[in-house]
Image 1: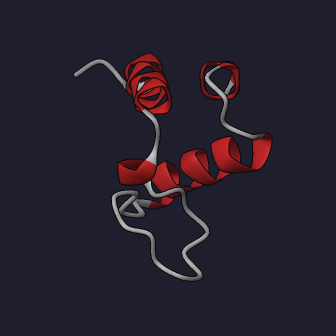
Image 2: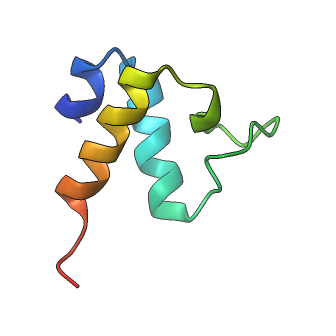
Amino acid sequence: MNILTDAGFTAAEADAVVRGLMQGVDLHQDRPGADAVNIDALSQEKREALDRFNLAVAGDA
């Protein structure tokens, strides 16, 4: 979570990203009521942080 909040995500945004990823929510869409962050609308810094976060939590394939 620190990767996300250090890049400027609020705690609520970071939580929504994590919950969205765990639930398989398409974070590329800004759907009303989805309670997810539209990653296409993020700043470059936040998108890079999200990429780092995904790499950090991804399981070894």
